[in-house]
Image (tube, rainbow over all chains, first blue to last red):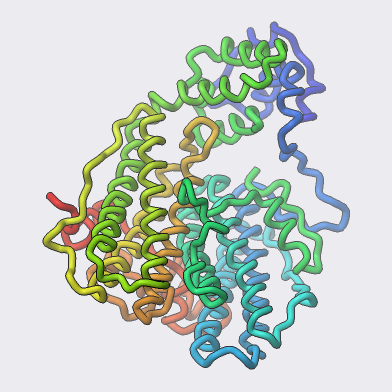
Length: 240
Length: 265
């Protein structure tokens, strides 16, 4: 909000005519009148209007394509993870578990490739580059460590889609996101049950009072995922 | 809470957002003065009431209808699990624990949706019961019904998400809340399917009535893209179908061959 505070203003600003639909810039002029007075109130809030991309960072972009790129980045990460699991599964996985993880690997690869195709078709030139994963912290030889990482990725994926859906303006994209997130939730439940049967939706992930799964804002999801990606990602303008 | 950010976002989906405030000038003046007076603690309450006035009475029946539709399904699910637990067929241990957890969530969803509808000055549906004559005696059959309810719930929520774009209750995005319920239903569905020895995701050859909407779960094409042949890599139809859940329209869900046929008349 710092941008509008400096625009200043006084009570006279209110006398300006309003146009419907209101334009973004004129709205900020209008809002500027009270911004000074409310700066204190707002200062306690996240300053999520900062669209400055960190030096050397990959910006996911803004608007709907930003949300799609955001999803594409996460699906790239998941697909790369499961490709590793599929290529050299932990020795202590059962045959059934191996088969299921082969299926999960295919689902994530399809999500990744579909999003790539959709972005290239609908927003030519705006897709982010292929990302390089960094899985140095994951021991792929042990079932327990692979499951722990899978749980992190799947729950994070669910929280990411749940938090970003509201930023989509195009209903068709929202439907697609909804069609993907429920499959991610199925993966999450499966992995959680492998770790501890019955933990598919336990109180650590679903609020006991409201029955709501968690939702995370893009910047928070990227912060959590950044350690697994070599490129620095910037999600500050996603959906804006 | 960033009021201007919220309004900016709203303005992109609802061009008349400022027109909804009964007095635009007064609203912002009051907001400014509230802060000036140092009544910071009261400001969020004021903002919430601002949106309540703007949207609570005018959001329209469309949003209330969607919430009542969701509430109907949650009431149906809740009563089903109440009957399942009361029936005494669920084995103790992990199965009983899972059913109790799922029932707890459905009850929470009922409470949340009921309170939200009331807050929006709507009238929440009540008294929806699972049809007694359709309730199976055998545990295995009960699980099959549970799977149908959960998978249908997943499809039903995503079929209505578009109607909630931009819908707010106070400063809360109703779309996000719906998504947060939707993914929990998917977790439930995955677990029930596992309890039945099935894959946690919906496979290709599950062509029962539950899955036969206008778009069947066997669908392998999304947004005009054939997932098996047009992605640069060849994927199996089974993987393509399982990687996306499909939607059901409200009419399909409420059809007597699906959830609609399970409601006690």
